[in-house]
Length: 305
Image 1 (cartoon, one colour):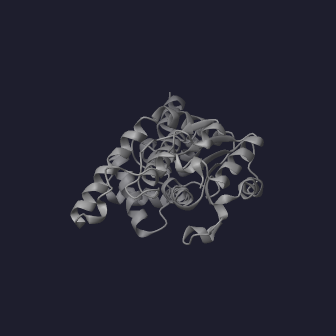
Image 2 (spheres, rainbow, N blue to C red; image 1 turned 90 degrees about the vertical axis):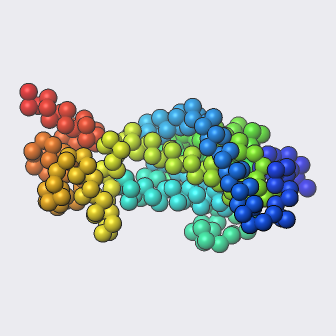
Image 3 (cartoon, helix red, strand yellow; image 1 turned 90 degrees about the horizontal axis):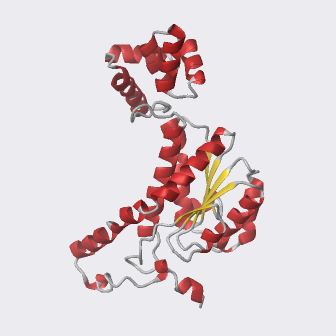
């Protein structure tokens, strides 16, 4: 038996749930809900470290880098989920934020036994994705010891990439291998070792915070509006129109008109309406404003004066 693994917080017996097998359905759900309430507080304690990670990731992306999430099992799936939401929400290139799971695509829906136990496979994926010093790599492992993830962050660090470790154990090995460690301690799981529960929830919250804050700092949000979304279906087109209306107080007819004139780009449409310029000029203003709507409008005002 692995004494180190057995000593981890996520592998301990939760004394609050030892009777859960004889509880009623309502009682089971109340216990789970009560335990879940500990997660936001654990994440809050890590905000300083999350902020360090966000600022470092933004710096790397501005210098031509990419963001990679690497994990196994639940951790890998959560990373893939977060990465896959960035293109439709923020209009990013699918290559900018990527999720990698031990065992490859098959492991997203089905367990691939043994894939997480190889440091070599983790090292290899860094080389296969041609990760360099420009990139940022977030290793996600509830236990903090998953060999695949440890191998990946070691290799990433070797090539000079920014390395970040997200785990749920104070004694986690990954903390000693990365530039920035994010460690929300959520305590023993409701069902012993089932880290898809509180640990997985903490991972989801942290990754949501990272990508959302990164995208805000890259100019992909105006106010609290996702102005870089790609309206690729009816729902998103409707949202794009509403975003333009909220941002400019334009009528629905005007918003629809400018969404079309902008090439279905809400950010460009907003700048066109607010400044009265053409699509080409709005795109130029946004370029000068580093992609920020507010800065683009300020550039216009300065040029006008």
